[in-house]
Length: 273
Image 1 (tube, helix red, strand yellow):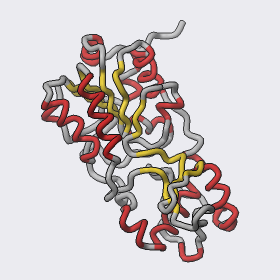
Image 2: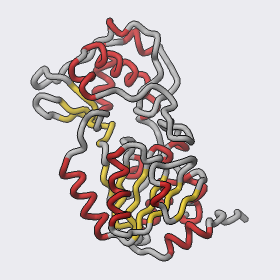
Image 3: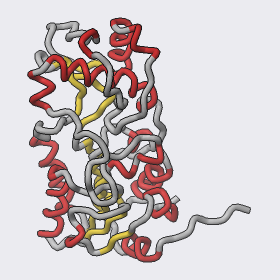
Image 4: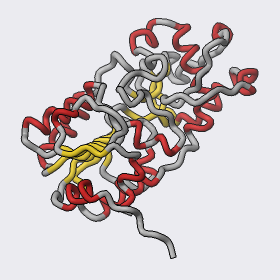
């Protein structure tokens, strides 16, 4: 006989009282899938801040460094599997309790777990986009192109970093070759929102529309230190929508929360499975 998952009574009561939850997830939801998070329990950066959009577009060395780190990190990131937190939220949706899931993550693990109604707020790392013609290519295909152009780099390894890259810090990136767009020769960029880049307006508008239909908000694994996610919590508070959060450590929205559960995401949500 297996033991039933331990319930978290306050969180379970919160979810039971609401039928149209707007769920917002962050990096903490995917850490048990082997993808590192960005911040410590105080909301501070654990490592160097992620690449900036302006630097990526204007500086060839920044692009070489980014793609070299990505070549190494993608090998594991691209193989990541959804964990119990992803499956629990998919079950919540299957039970008709989820108005929409808005994720700040770019790993597509919610979709892999079977979640259907998902908005990728910051894009998706499994696609590469040309900044000239807009052509999109699967990241797996671009991985092959990067490997062919930089065979000597394939023997390297380093600790995983949150953006599907690896902590390569002391290499000479000047020899790393980044293939251009096959269609127009322009710069290729992962189809994600970098720091300094704006979330598309239609994505924000769609998410806000779903939030307006919700009767409660559930935050899972996010410190909300980035405004692109925090603004939805502000909007919920302005509408007097009750807000619960599952997160280890402080969040930017602590003063706005109806309920806070400081527990690992998969443990806190285990009762949904």
